[in-house]
Every structure is written in C-alpha cells, then in structure tokens.
Length: 312
Ligand code: CP
Image 1: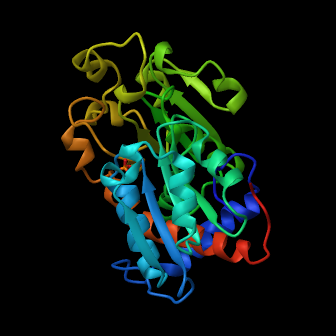
Image 2 (image 1 turned 180 degrees about the vertical axis):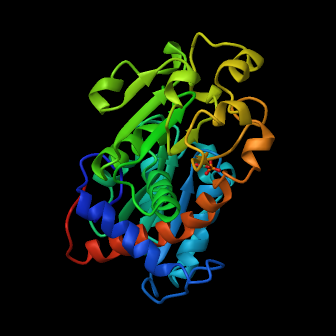
C-alpha cells in the first residue's frame, strides 16, 4: 500500500494481510492492542472536515500505539475559515514534515483528489469521503466477522437500511465479495437502495421478513439525513416499523447471527435498545477492533511509501 483509499479492486491477499496484521496487534486477552515502534519518528495528521467520534479517536489511538506523533487539526479553528483553500492547508501541513494524512471529507472523491496532489512521500488514508467509501470501517467490520464467525467465506450477510447514502455499505460490499462471503444482501425501501446494486454483486430485498432469513450477520445502518437531497423517506416511526431491528425480526436470522452497526446508532429508528445492547450485538467489539485495523493500514501504507505496492 502507498495510500488506502477504497476496498474496491484490492486483492483478496492484500485484504487478508490487513486482517492478519491487525490480528497480530491484538493481545491475547483482547483487552488491549500492543504498543509497537513501527511509526516512531513519523508524523500523522488527522484531518476531519466532517464530524466523527469513533474513526477520529481510533486513528489517534492507533497512531499512538504505533509510536507516531499525531496532530489533530481543529478544522473549525483553522485558517480555512479565513478563505484558505483545502490544498493550501494541506501543502502547509506537508511543510511541517508530515508523513501521513488521515482525511474525512463530505465530498466523494476527496481522498483520491488529495492523494493525487500531495508529494509522493505523504500517505493518504481515507477516513470516509461523501457517500463513496469508508475503507477502514469496512476492514474493521471484516475483522469483527472473522473473529466472531472464524471466517468470512460462506457467510450470508445482510446490510439493512439506508444503503444509498452509505459509504460504509459500498466499502463493505466490495470487501465481503472479495473475501468470499456466500451472499451479500441489502434490505431497505427502494428509495434507499442504489440502482447499481446488482452490479456491486449484492441482492436487493425490500422486506425484512425475506432478507433476514438464514443470515449469519446482520449489519444495521442509520438514515444519513445529512446526505439526503429530496429523498422520498418514510417517517422515523414508519421506518422503525418496517426496517427497525427488533428481537422479533432478529429471530428470522440464524440463532447465532451477530448484529453489527458502524455507529452512530439511532435507538428506536433503525435498531431497538434490546438488540443493540443484547447478547448477539458485537457493536462495541467493532469499535475496539478499529484500533488494530487502523494500525495495520497505517503501518502497511508507511512501509509502502518506502517501496511497496502502489494501490492508488
Ligand atoms: N463509523 C463511523 O465512521 O463513526 P464516526 O462518524 O463516529 O467516525
């Protein structure tokens, strides 16, 4: 890796290497990740132009566990409010001897654009761009499935809710297909399913009763209202009635199915508390695994900068 921008078109070997590397950072008691010197002397800059709790915090913890120096740029208090362009901001940060930018931006394609503009020795990690991709989220989801189900091959996975506006769903579908999931289903109202869903290799279902049957993994997504423009939407209570995950609906999946959600969760809209906090939920495990996965991606991108494979 030189940059990590998307899970699309990456090989099964490379995705597996990310998961294996992440596994190697998790201590056997599962209570922590190891501190290693792999990025000692390197400077990582967190550039979040959109809000975040989980991604930003776990990238910061991951950089610290890799022994890097990390700078969290406070965008709201930065000189962007005085009219400085995105690229001028980045070139100034580059001049501070930065080695890696972790970028979240509301525009699809922002991370690719930045990767093309910065000098070749700065690695770009996509922390979510518009509705396009959220590749480290997808990889921590793959690690969660692998650690709870032993393997991704053969699993029937349902992704439920607002797929249309979800960068997470797109990155998950690419990773699940490449890593050999038996079936990837998307469940939601037609207005919230992308038109190109067949070409992504996923199967569309419009009713929970049909789509959840025999699933091993159920991934719930929130309604991403910040990315909706004139979407024909049911009210939150109607959405919950049709697509909200309740204990009753979860019983349609396999008895040992796991329940996932990238967060933030909206209780009572896409998931009820009894399920989010229930015995089948691995939602907080996903967050924990995010540290090791982000360590793996950062370590591999940094070694790629020093002569590895280019995955731009
Ligand atoms: N899953 C996710 O991207 O959460 P944050 O928006 O809190 O980073």
